[in-house]
Image (cartoon, rainbow, N blue to C red; front, side, top):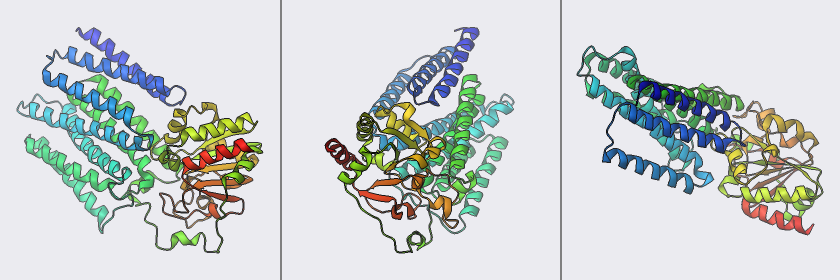
Amino acid sequence: MSETTSNFLYIATIVAFILALRFLSSPRRARLGNQIGAVGMAIAVAVTLAREGLSITWWMIGALVVGAAVGVVGARRVQMTAMPQMVALFNGVGGGAAALIALSEFDRLAPLPGRVSGSQTAGILISALIGSISFSGSLVAFGKLQELVSGQPVVYPGQRVGNALVLAAALALAVAAVSTEEIWLLAGLIVIALLFGILLVLPIGGADMPVVISFLNAGTGVAAAATGFALHVPVLIVSGMLVGASGTLLTLMMSRAMNRSLGNVLFGAFGLVPEGAAADATADGRSARATTPDDVAVMLAYARRVVFVPGYGLAVAQAQHDLARLGEMLEERGVDVKYGIHPVAGRMPGHMNVLLAEANVPYDELYEMERVNPELPQTDVAVVVGANDVVNPSARNQPGSPIYGMPIIDVDRTSSVVVIKRSLSPGFAGIDNPLFYEPNTVMLFADAKQALENLMAAVKSV
């Protein structure tokens, strides 16, 4: 393949990746964005093999077949509740691949003194360092989300100093590897970076995993771009920086959505709540009021406007289709139905959007937090389905709360609130929710799927 042809196809690939990102910003076009991105990646792989004049071996064919099979089967079989774990794993694999390529390229180039450019050296070291951190950190994030590792922050005395020393050791090995061109030093750098990735993510609580996944995804993008410099592959540089830039912006946006800095997310050990703090919100002796599906059905059937606020409990119960059907039933009765989406509801960015899109909820009924909050004072009933911290009024009016200042969906400002939840247990933040004890709130204690099925049956009979 000529260089002109390959460069033209690389430009087409870059355009495909940019369009994919553009379309992924809208639920209506997200599927098309994924398809365009997949086509772009297929072109990039094919052109790279042809451009470098590589002979296709059985090992390469086997790797392509195994990788494609794992990707297709995994994506089709994974439950929506496990989608964040899958994203963490796929992201980690990308970082690990970048680190292995760096090791291989260093081994190939080190015996050739004077033939290794500065950009290649920098690319190799950045790929090895950041790719390894992203790989091990993503595995820990997977373990926390899968509940193989405690979702609570895992801390130890002198943690920050220890982490700084580990990172300093990795950087020292990087300098030594460049100076001596010894492959074992780069291998040592990768091992130390893997350890640092584990130590970085362990102290972060489960509530912050969406931000961590996005942050590590940005790191994988940077590692991929650095690999592009090491291999002199422009499309890898551009695509890696697209991922790095978009992941960084998303990370900062989510941190801002929780009114916290990225440093606080990564180093604040959020979720370690002092003993007794959870009880402070209910120290006045108030109790939650339980209700029945029949009573809630009457409230919904005769309401003018209803806003549903989904959370991770909806995903756990696989109840998104039931919620969509209940919404359709209410609309048939002339009720104005909307869905309020908090940016960090669930366990990954856009989790609730994807969940409801899967259930064919109309896109124009999905309202982001900034759009739905002005509607709530004129809303008759807000139904919270499996959400907790994202509707906790402590974030607005309790300065001592760990989540104080975090923007929330203001369901407490509606005329009536129905909270569908299995118990009064706290959410990821580990603190009680005063919303449950407000005079305009009633609790429907049940699994989300069972509760919604009961509500549909009750609405039919109203």
